[in-house]
Image (cartoon, rainbow, N blue to C red):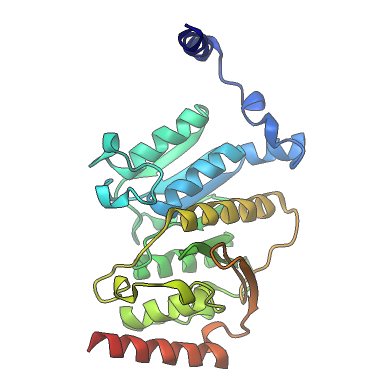
Length: 303
């Protein structure tokens, strides 16, 4: 009887209580001021990718009180997404990721302004996707090299701060690309290289410290040629916490924001954190050596 009453009572409260932005995000106050929370309400964040990190970024930032989003993804949820993607459930199988994630975010804040790009982003709609946004956060699939390159290039051109946080093993690696500072292209040096070379340079550039490499117990699970690799929900959730914290600092202009060629990797499995500095990005001698090793390892594995 007690349980039934409490459920009825909770449901009754849920039916009659109107949404209040101030009440919904009141527990943020203390770590942010009332004035800062009001500023976050006015900000618009663009997130490309609505699956693993992208979906979790949206929900985390919605709970932070960000007021507007643009989200893009052309894919639908599949059972292979269950190990890490916040929107992947039996009830959402085969449903568009952007629709599911937008609905989940609006359940947190029904006042949200969310614009969805159900075909994903491409060279034609990218200017609209980034127009007037305060921050871009990269949630694209690892292998989406061309559109990632175009997106970061346009961010640099428009002066839009851009953040990428990669889930690596049971940790996360952060890089910020801020207006007027080193660009994505200057750091990764992709140019017109083949996709395999971009993949190797991306991995090496994302996490120069390589904290995750020591506990990959099934190396065959990584196959750049087949565009597949392992993932963990721990890595996804750590990425969301880091990305949202960087977003807070960038959007409120509060606290230090390290940007490329500075980077950070935290690995929960190894209980280690590493701050890296690679002047010249992948053109740095240390990075060139690591890229050469990665290229040889891939060639050996492909035989």
